[in-house]
Image (spheres, rainbow, N blue to C red):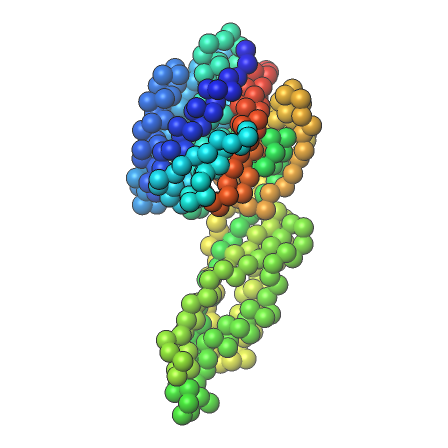
Length: 372
Protein backbone atom coordinates (compact mmCIF):
# COMPACT_ATOMS: atom_id res chain seq x y z
CA UNK A 1 0.00 0.00 0.00
CA UNK A 2 1.39 3.41 -0.99
CA UNK A 3 1.56 6.73 0.85
CA UNK A 4 -0.87 9.44 -0.22
CA UNK A 5 0.61 12.71 -1.53
CA UNK A 6 -2.51 14.81 -1.06
CA UNK A 7 -2.87 13.61 2.52
CA UNK A 8 0.82 14.26 3.22
CA UNK A 9 0.66 17.85 1.99
CA UNK A 10 -2.54 18.51 3.92
CA UNK A 11 -1.01 17.07 7.09
CA UNK A 12 2.22 19.05 6.73
CA UNK A 13 0.38 22.33 6.17
CA UNK A 14 -1.77 21.65 9.22
CA UNK A 15 1.30 21.03 11.37
CA UNK A 16 3.28 24.11 10.32
CA UNK A 17 0.31 26.33 11.14
CA UNK A 18 0.62 25.27 14.78
CA UNK A 19 3.23 27.51 16.38
CA UNK A 20 5.59 25.49 18.59
CA UNK A 21 8.76 27.36 19.58
CA UNK A 22 11.05 25.69 22.09
CA UNK A 23 9.64 25.53 25.63
CA UNK A 24 6.16 26.24 24.25
CA UNK A 25 5.16 23.14 22.29
CA UNK A 26 1.94 22.61 24.26
CA UNK A 27 -0.55 23.23 21.44
CA UNK A 28 1.28 20.93 19.05
CA UNK A 29 1.69 18.19 21.66
CA UNK A 30 -2.04 18.23 22.44
CA UNK A 31 -2.81 18.06 18.72
CA UNK A 32 -0.46 15.12 18.27
CA UNK A 33 -1.93 13.28 21.23
CA UNK A 34 -5.35 13.48 19.62
CA UNK A 35 -4.00 12.54 16.20
CA UNK A 36 -2.05 9.55 17.48
CA UNK A 37 -5.10 8.40 19.41
CA UNK A 38 -7.02 8.09 16.13
CA UNK A 39 -4.19 5.95 14.72
CA UNK A 40 -4.33 3.20 17.36
CA UNK A 41 -1.28 4.58 19.18
CA UNK A 42 -1.15 4.54 22.98
CA UNK A 43 0.47 7.82 24.07
CA UNK A 44 2.12 9.02 27.26
CA UNK A 45 3.78 12.33 28.03
CA UNK A 46 6.75 12.48 30.39
CA UNK A 47 7.83 15.39 32.59
CA UNK A 48 11.00 16.30 30.68
CA UNK A 49 9.75 19.85 30.07
CA UNK A 50 9.77 20.57 33.80
CA UNK A 51 13.53 20.11 33.80
CA UNK A 52 14.28 22.91 31.33
CA UNK A 53 11.45 25.36 32.08
CA UNK A 54 9.29 24.12 29.21
CA UNK A 55 5.54 23.58 29.17
CA UNK A 56 5.71 20.26 27.33
CA UNK A 57 7.33 16.87 27.84
CA UNK A 58 8.18 14.20 25.32
CA UNK A 59 5.39 12.20 23.73
CA UNK A 60 6.06 8.46 23.77
CA UNK A 61 3.67 6.43 21.67
CA UNK A 62 3.38 2.69 21.09
CA UNK A 63 1.93 1.13 17.97
CA UNK A 64 1.48 -2.63 18.39
CA UNK A 65 2.86 -5.15 15.95
CA UNK A 66 4.30 -8.65 15.75
CA UNK A 67 5.98 -9.38 19.10
CA UNK A 68 8.35 -11.85 17.41
CA UNK A 69 9.96 -9.00 15.43
CA UNK A 70 12.40 -6.42 16.85
CA UNK A 71 10.96 -3.19 18.24
CA UNK A 72 12.17 0.02 16.60
CA UNK A 73 11.53 3.67 17.32
CA UNK A 74 10.76 6.60 15.02
CA UNK A 75 11.58 10.06 16.40
CA UNK A 76 11.13 13.71 15.44
CA UNK A 77 11.13 16.89 17.51
CA UNK A 78 8.10 19.12 18.08
CA UNK A 79 9.81 22.45 18.70
CA UNK A 80 10.87 24.93 16.04
CA UNK A 81 13.91 27.16 16.34
CA UNK A 82 11.89 30.37 16.75
CA UNK A 83 8.28 31.50 16.66
CA UNK A 84 6.38 31.24 13.38
CA UNK A 85 3.34 33.13 14.64
CA UNK A 86 1.22 34.30 11.71
CA UNK A 87 2.84 31.88 9.27
CA UNK A 88 1.51 31.96 5.73
CA UNK A 89 2.56 28.78 3.90
CA UNK A 90 2.85 29.05 0.13
CA UNK A 91 2.59 26.07 -2.23
CA UNK A 92 4.18 26.91 -5.56
CA UNK A 93 5.54 24.71 -8.34
CA UNK A 94 5.87 21.68 -6.10
CA UNK A 95 7.60 23.58 -3.29
CA UNK A 96 6.21 24.54 0.12
CA UNK A 97 7.67 27.70 1.65
CA UNK A 98 6.41 30.79 3.48
CA UNK A 99 5.74 34.35 2.36
CA UNK A 100 9.19 35.24 3.70
CA UNK A 101 8.11 36.75 7.02
CA UNK A 102 8.55 33.62 9.17
CA UNK A 103 10.37 30.32 9.16
CA UNK A 104 8.45 27.36 7.79
CA UNK A 105 8.99 24.93 10.66
CA UNK A 106 9.69 22.05 8.30
CA UNK A 107 12.49 21.33 10.77
CA UNK A 108 11.08 19.12 12.11
CA UNK A 109 7.43 18.96 11.07
CA UNK A 110 8.51 17.22 7.89
CA UNK A 111 9.74 14.39 10.10
CA UNK A 112 6.51 14.32 12.10
CA UNK A 113 4.49 14.25 8.88
CA UNK A 114 6.39 11.19 7.63
CA UNK A 115 5.71 9.32 10.88
CA UNK A 116 2.00 10.16 10.87
CA UNK A 117 1.58 9.15 7.23
CA UNK A 118 3.34 5.84 7.89
CA UNK A 119 0.94 5.10 10.74
CA UNK A 120 -2.05 5.95 8.54
CA UNK A 121 -0.86 3.47 5.90
CA UNK A 122 -0.15 0.75 8.44
CA UNK A 123 -3.58 1.15 10.00
CA UNK A 124 -5.30 0.39 6.70
CA UNK A 125 -2.93 -2.30 5.41
CA UNK A 126 -1.87 -5.84 6.22
CA UNK A 127 1.85 -5.02 6.29
CA UNK A 128 3.63 -7.18 8.85
CA UNK A 129 5.78 -5.13 11.22
CA UNK A 130 7.16 -5.23 14.73
CA UNK A 131 6.16 -3.03 17.64
CA UNK A 132 6.90 0.62 16.88
CA UNK A 133 7.68 3.30 19.44
CA UNK A 134 6.91 6.87 18.41
CA UNK A 135 8.95 9.59 20.11
CA UNK A 136 8.14 13.26 19.61
CA UNK A 137 10.65 15.24 21.64
CA UNK A 138 10.49 18.76 23.06
CA UNK A 139 13.30 21.26 23.52
CA UNK A 140 15.54 19.85 20.78
CA UNK A 141 16.50 23.18 19.25
CA UNK A 142 17.79 24.63 22.54
CA UNK A 143 20.06 21.78 23.59
CA UNK A 144 18.49 18.38 22.84
CA UNK A 145 16.85 18.67 26.25
CA UNK A 146 13.79 16.53 25.60
CA UNK A 147 15.72 13.44 24.53
CA UNK A 148 18.35 14.13 27.17
CA UNK A 149 15.78 13.93 29.97
CA UNK A 150 13.83 11.04 28.45
CA UNK A 151 14.01 7.97 30.69
CA UNK A 152 15.83 5.18 28.83
CA UNK A 153 13.78 2.62 30.77
CA UNK A 154 10.65 3.83 28.96
CA UNK A 155 11.95 2.46 25.65
CA UNK A 156 12.13 -1.12 24.42
CA UNK A 157 13.45 -0.33 20.92
CA UNK A 158 16.56 -2.15 19.76
CA UNK A 159 17.38 0.47 17.10
CA UNK A 160 16.11 3.95 16.29
CA UNK A 161 15.52 6.30 13.38
CA UNK A 162 15.53 10.06 13.95
CA UNK A 163 13.91 12.07 11.15
CA UNK A 164 15.65 15.42 11.44
CA UNK A 165 18.42 15.92 8.92
CA UNK A 166 18.03 18.64 6.34
CA UNK A 167 18.74 17.93 2.72
CA UNK A 168 18.25 14.87 0.52
CA UNK A 169 16.20 11.82 1.48
CA UNK A 170 19.03 9.51 0.43
CA UNK A 171 21.32 10.90 3.15
CA UNK A 172 21.93 8.76 6.23
CA UNK A 173 23.78 10.43 9.10
CA UNK A 174 26.06 7.81 10.65
CA UNK A 175 28.35 10.04 12.72
CA UNK A 176 28.14 13.34 14.56
CA UNK A 177 30.45 15.17 16.95
CA UNK A 178 30.52 15.44 20.69
CA UNK A 179 30.33 19.02 21.93
CA UNK A 180 31.87 20.83 24.88
CA UNK A 181 30.67 24.36 25.66
CA UNK A 182 32.96 26.73 27.54
CA UNK A 183 32.82 30.02 29.42
CA UNK A 184 35.98 32.09 29.97
CA UNK A 185 35.65 34.68 32.75
CA UNK A 186 38.40 37.30 32.87
CA UNK A 187 38.93 39.68 35.79
CA UNK A 188 41.41 42.50 35.17
CA UNK A 189 41.84 45.82 37.00
CA UNK A 190 39.80 48.95 36.34
CA UNK A 191 41.47 52.33 35.83
CA UNK A 192 40.73 55.70 34.26
CA UNK A 193 41.48 55.21 30.57
CA UNK A 194 42.64 58.82 30.05
CA UNK A 195 44.36 59.66 33.34
CA UNK A 196 46.19 56.49 34.43
CA UNK A 197 45.55 53.59 32.02
CA UNK A 198 48.90 52.01 32.99
CA UNK A 199 47.44 51.16 36.38
CA UNK A 200 44.73 49.04 34.80
CA UNK A 201 44.67 45.51 33.36
CA UNK A 202 42.30 45.43 30.43
CA UNK A 203 40.19 42.28 30.51
CA UNK A 204 39.33 43.00 26.87
CA UNK A 205 43.01 42.95 25.85
CA UNK A 206 43.53 39.75 27.78
CA UNK A 207 40.51 38.24 26.03
CA UNK A 208 41.76 39.31 22.62
CA UNK A 209 45.15 37.76 23.36
CA UNK A 210 43.48 34.49 24.37
CA UNK A 211 41.30 34.39 21.27
CA UNK A 212 44.27 35.08 19.01
CA UNK A 213 46.02 32.01 20.42
CA UNK A 214 43.08 29.64 20.04
CA UNK A 215 42.53 27.37 17.05
CA UNK A 216 39.08 28.32 15.77
CA UNK A 217 36.81 27.51 12.85
CA UNK A 218 37.44 24.33 10.85
CA UNK A 219 40.38 22.65 12.57
CA UNK A 220 40.19 19.40 10.59
CA UNK A 221 37.48 17.35 8.89
CA UNK A 222 36.26 16.08 12.27
CA UNK A 223 36.87 19.05 14.55
CA UNK A 224 35.62 22.63 14.89
CA UNK A 225 35.72 25.39 17.49
CA UNK A 226 33.95 28.72 17.73
CA UNK A 227 33.69 31.83 19.87
CA UNK A 228 30.08 32.99 19.73
CA UNK A 229 29.62 35.56 22.51
CA UNK A 230 31.85 38.26 23.99
CA UNK A 231 30.52 40.49 26.77
CA UNK A 232 32.32 43.11 28.83
CA UNK A 233 33.22 46.71 29.48
CA UNK A 234 31.15 49.59 30.87
CA UNK A 235 32.35 52.79 29.22
CA UNK A 236 35.01 54.06 26.83
CA UNK A 237 36.83 55.93 29.61
CA UNK A 238 37.26 52.88 31.85
CA UNK A 239 39.89 50.19 31.40
CA UNK A 240 37.57 47.17 31.35
CA UNK A 241 38.02 44.90 34.35
CA UNK A 242 35.57 42.18 33.28
CA UNK A 243 35.06 40.10 30.16
CA UNK A 244 33.11 36.95 29.41
CA UNK A 245 33.84 34.79 26.38
CA UNK A 246 31.50 31.95 25.41
CA UNK A 247 32.37 29.30 22.90
CA UNK A 248 32.14 25.67 21.89
CA UNK A 249 34.40 22.87 20.69
CA UNK A 250 33.21 19.86 18.68
CA UNK A 251 34.77 16.72 17.26
CA UNK A 252 33.65 13.34 16.01
CA UNK A 253 36.88 12.01 17.56
CA UNK A 254 36.61 12.15 21.37
CA UNK A 255 40.41 12.13 21.76
CA UNK A 256 40.73 15.17 19.50
CA UNK A 257 38.05 16.94 21.52
CA UNK A 258 39.86 16.20 24.78
CA UNK A 259 43.09 17.51 23.26
CA UNK A 260 41.36 20.71 22.13
CA UNK A 261 39.74 21.27 25.54
CA UNK A 262 43.11 20.87 27.26
CA UNK A 263 44.66 23.25 24.74
CA UNK A 264 42.08 25.95 25.52
CA UNK A 265 42.67 25.47 29.25
CA UNK A 266 46.42 25.78 28.68
CA UNK A 267 46.12 29.02 26.74
CA UNK A 268 43.94 30.53 29.46
CA UNK A 269 46.42 29.55 32.15
CA UNK A 270 49.33 30.96 30.15
CA UNK A 271 47.60 34.32 29.55
CA UNK A 272 46.59 34.57 33.19
CA UNK A 273 50.27 34.40 34.15
CA UNK A 274 51.45 36.76 31.40
CA UNK A 275 48.87 39.46 32.15
CA UNK A 276 48.65 38.96 35.92
CA UNK A 277 44.89 38.84 35.51
CA UNK A 278 42.41 36.31 36.83
CA UNK A 279 41.23 33.91 34.10
CA UNK A 280 38.76 31.14 34.84
CA UNK A 281 37.52 28.70 32.18
CA UNK A 282 34.71 26.21 32.70
CA UNK A 283 33.63 23.47 30.32
CA UNK A 284 30.26 21.75 30.18
CA UNK A 285 29.52 18.66 28.12
CA UNK A 286 26.62 19.39 25.77
CA UNK A 287 26.33 15.87 24.34
CA UNK A 288 28.35 12.85 23.22
CA UNK A 289 29.17 12.02 19.62
CA UNK A 290 28.52 8.78 17.76
CA UNK A 291 30.13 6.76 14.98
CA UNK A 292 28.26 4.03 13.13
CA UNK A 293 29.33 2.03 10.07
CA UNK A 294 27.54 0.15 7.34
CA UNK A 295 28.13 -3.00 9.38
CA UNK A 296 25.72 -1.77 12.08
CA UNK A 297 22.24 -3.25 11.76
CA UNK A 298 20.48 0.09 11.97
CA UNK A 299 22.59 1.42 9.09
CA UNK A 300 21.87 -1.68 7.02
CA UNK A 301 18.14 -1.20 7.61
CA UNK A 302 18.27 2.46 6.56
CA UNK A 303 20.34 1.68 3.47
CA UNK A 304 17.96 -1.07 2.39
CA UNK A 305 14.98 1.27 2.78
CA UNK A 306 16.64 4.02 0.72
CA UNK A 307 17.33 1.50 -2.05
CA UNK A 308 13.77 0.22 -1.89
CA UNK A 309 12.35 3.66 -2.73
CA UNK A 310 14.65 3.90 -5.74
CA UNK A 311 17.47 6.05 -4.36
CA UNK A 312 21.17 5.43 -3.69
CA UNK A 313 22.06 5.63 0.02
CA UNK A 314 24.79 8.08 0.99
CA UNK A 315 26.40 7.66 4.42
CA UNK A 316 27.42 11.05 5.78
CA UNK A 317 28.77 12.71 8.94
CA UNK A 318 27.00 15.74 10.38
CA UNK A 319 28.70 18.70 12.00
CA UNK A 320 25.89 19.37 14.47
CA UNK A 321 24.14 17.40 17.15
CA UNK A 322 20.65 15.92 17.05
CA UNK A 323 18.49 13.64 19.15
CA UNK A 324 20.41 10.79 17.51
CA UNK A 325 23.43 11.79 19.61
CA UNK A 326 21.44 11.34 22.78
CA UNK A 327 19.79 8.05 21.82
CA UNK A 328 23.15 6.57 20.81
CA UNK A 329 24.57 7.72 24.13
CA UNK A 330 21.66 5.95 25.86
CA UNK A 331 22.72 2.74 24.17
CA UNK A 332 20.25 2.55 21.28
CA UNK A 333 22.00 2.51 17.86
CA UNK A 334 20.32 5.35 15.98
CA UNK A 335 20.72 7.04 12.59
CA UNK A 336 19.47 10.46 11.56
CA UNK A 337 17.66 10.52 8.23
CA UNK A 338 17.16 13.27 5.67
CA UNK A 339 13.70 14.86 5.52
CA UNK A 340 14.24 17.10 2.48
CA UNK A 341 14.08 20.49 4.21
CA UNK A 342 16.41 23.19 2.86
CA UNK A 343 17.52 26.51 4.37
CA UNK A 344 16.19 25.47 7.78
CA UNK A 345 16.25 28.04 10.60
CA UNK A 346 15.74 30.86 8.05
CA UNK A 347 12.81 32.64 6.42
CA UNK A 348 13.94 31.00 3.14
CA UNK A 349 13.19 27.53 4.55
CA UNK A 350 11.43 25.27 2.05
CA UNK A 351 10.68 21.66 1.21
CA UNK A 352 9.70 19.95 -2.02
CA UNK A 353 6.47 17.97 -1.99
CA UNK A 354 8.36 15.16 -3.71
CA UNK A 355 10.74 15.01 -0.74
CA UNK A 356 7.89 14.96 1.79
CA UNK A 357 6.41 12.01 -0.09
CA UNK A 358 9.73 10.20 -0.38
CA UNK A 359 10.43 10.71 3.31
CA UNK A 360 7.14 9.02 4.16
CA UNK A 361 7.93 6.24 1.67
CA UNK A 362 11.30 5.79 3.35
CA UNK A 363 9.81 5.43 6.83
CA UNK A 364 7.18 3.01 5.55
CA UNK A 365 9.94 0.93 3.91
CA UNK A 366 11.87 0.83 7.18
CA UNK A 367 8.98 -0.44 9.30
CA UNK A 368 7.86 -2.87 6.59
CA UNK A 369 11.23 -4.59 6.40
CA UNK A 370 12.02 -5.26 10.05
CA UNK A 371 13.23 -8.84 10.25
CA UNK A 372 14.09 -11.23 13.07
